[in-house]
Image (cartoon, rainbow, N blue to C red; front, side):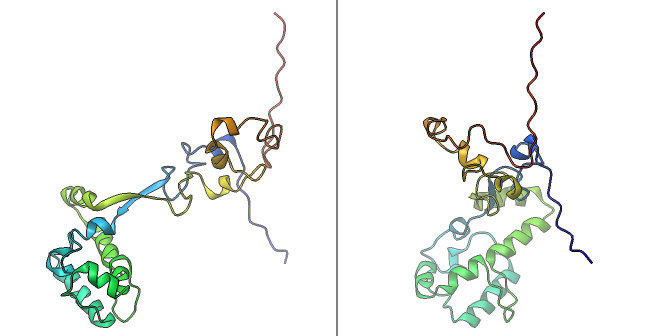
Length: 199
């Protein structure tokens, strides 16, 4: 049986616009960044122990506190120490905040717990409150270039459209980028120029 090749998306001008659903990165929707929980903000006071004034959101959740104790026992983390000292002495402390996929603890990290609480929350007030502990981070898919991977894969002279538009104006001229001018994008048909008729 012949092996079928994956069907390529047809390239169009809108495929290279982050304002179009056909060109925008599917992860960040063309924004180039994602708004996510920031560990530097979730830990409100690094000079205090994690469960004694160090942790901001989630510190009132008895279930989260129980999970943190289980993870601390598993990784031999002294929760009585200030979080900054604890983090330097044991690198696992940072992973406990970010992500812990250990099947022995069943704990996926403080940030993952808080993300789930935001998704499950029915209160807009709680969601607005959690915005105080978030920051914009570059999109991991497009790396801030805002376009779909298929659009960024199209390159002329080794440059994608995002790379080209990021160049300084004086570096975009035919003198500096002669390989770009007059080139055709693979898969795109050039529109024939219409001649003007004399009146």
